[in-house]
Image (cartoon, rainbow, N blue to C red; front, side, top):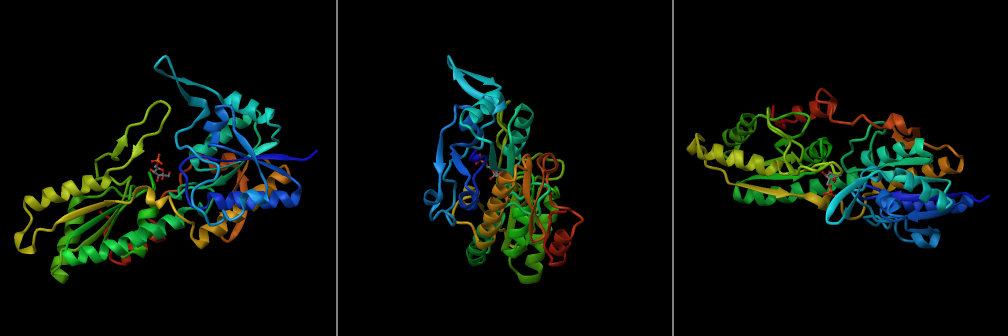
Length: 370
Ligand code: F6P
């Protein structure tokens, strides 16, 4: 009997999702496997499942396109499915409905392209009868069991370009320029873009910062170059020592909090310090903040992300063809391999504060806020 595989994208989108779909569909065609694209991730499946067949002609020209042709949602969780009944929010477990929908659609299994949230849902569906294969995506690069996730390097490129631009305007006005980048509880985007973009200060969640260390760095620039221009990258999850991560929305029983605001917290603290007790002969620096936001998630994937995306897609379909379910494809060195999905979850890949990356940033004279 012909195999039928479902394909879904879940969580926040990122550059490279379409490249995974492109490669998986093309690999399936060669194997004589039918592919069905599931719209809007697990949220879509929990709502009854809208699917469409995907053949080579349906994915033509999408390799380099940003976003996802299947749609996605960053809030959907079938085990905490939210609906409004009589004006009240009702949360219910629709995990079994998801598995029944998959069976009704005649799917042998599904390839789930997502981050920790989506892959955790996929894993929770296994005991209920689902067969799944995970493909690790996220600009945050925070998934364990893979050297990198796709989407990350495109986000780094975008953030680095933003820093290059902030540098020229910041230098012209001799200002302190702060750029807030994404990453949730991981500082990878901040650290990589900050190093590549020659930031003077990089603040990451893994190293709670001291305001005095940042002020010292600005002072040093005055002492050495008679300038207060300072380029600062702040990860959205960065926070001062003894302080908490800033959130835009505290979340709910069904939704995780929305992280953000770290740059404004820093800007306010710096402005306050400049008004009170800052040595005037050094000049009172002006501070300007840019929050890069979803610009990091949009647009075409860079060459590296296209390559790992399409190799992940090809390998995921090879696993499905071979009936090797409940695994996640991953990058090890230059090889695409796979690990049991269970092993890939539950351990976040954070910046090692004693690792080489941090050491090299310090040796380049970058202040990490400690
Ligand atoms: O996990 C990816 C990510 O882009 C985070 O870096 C960020 O905190 C979050 O998603 C933003 O999510 P949303 O799209 O719901 O605003």
